[in-house]
Image (tube, rainbow, N blue to C red; front, side):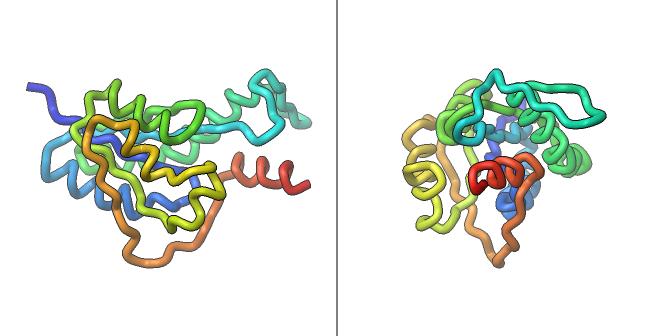
Length: 169
């Protein structure tokens, strides 16, 4: 019998550390495998076929840059789970987070999805709707919202910071 799969939604801004800590404990107790899911979206106005280049570096497509950045920033998370003896797969998707998470849960045959319970006032500003509600609507598996127990400092990945700088001018 195959191990059950726990889908864990993560971001690159360290806002999901409380979710991953909880997931390591839960997956270990249940002897589950983990699919870490991260949704990637291009900055407004950046097309998928945009080529990004920097002096001394090879030119790369915008989507490839996002994926490389996501793999770089999630490597420590993958190592955290694998170091605890938990089989782990990184699932990267392009598009709206709720859709990416829902699709991954379906494709992975997840028995549960873990999602951070953010401040509800911020989510509509970021995605135009409440992410938690959108994930629940798209998943056939139960969705467990993991509440943050202490206030974490807001951080951003390199790609997120670059996109915000371009948008803000």
